[in-house]
Length: 121
Length: 110
Image (cartoon, rainbow over all chains, first blue to last red; front, side, top):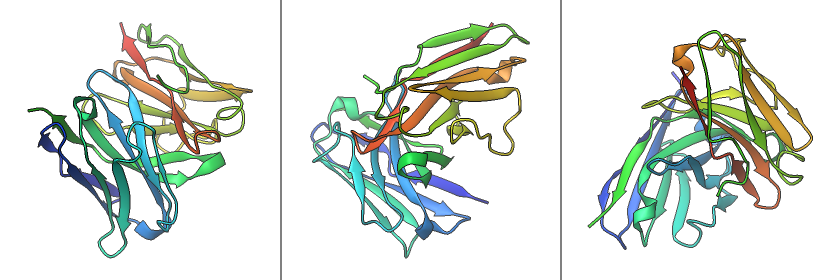
């Protein structure tokens, strides 16, 4: 069964850091690019970071650029997102998604159910 | 503010046909293909369409999508209560070197 499962959410203090993971199963992890998307309370989906299938290319949204790192581990079929200098507007549900194609034919065909991050003191 | 523009809400009664628009620019929709996603409360987002109008297996043919120039559209006919949720469009943005998302349209089945 093709599946993505996020973990690592919780309550984080403003200015703190978080590390999210996304475990993949049911498909060949190393042949796909991946994406992290966030949904803040009452807001729409916002992409945060993308990593290519081989990890050589990464893209970041302006909202997290410079304070986030997306990475992947082919030995454990795990996607990760590390963020620091967190602020209240980073609160939300964080989803990982499998990218079927980057660039011109971009789309995401498999999504996780999300993990919730709350930035609060 | 989202790169792609969608109406914040849409509504219809069961059995009706509703459509959701997605407006972009030459650097995103104008140059690349569009995908659509359905996000029902408490669930993972689901791919509805890719490559403008390609429907993955399992998506009912009541759903249709199209693209013209820098705009795209999603239509749902024979509206059902289980269609109630949020709908998003997306496309690669050559200027951003990243994805462009619409702000989402909340569909209410009256």
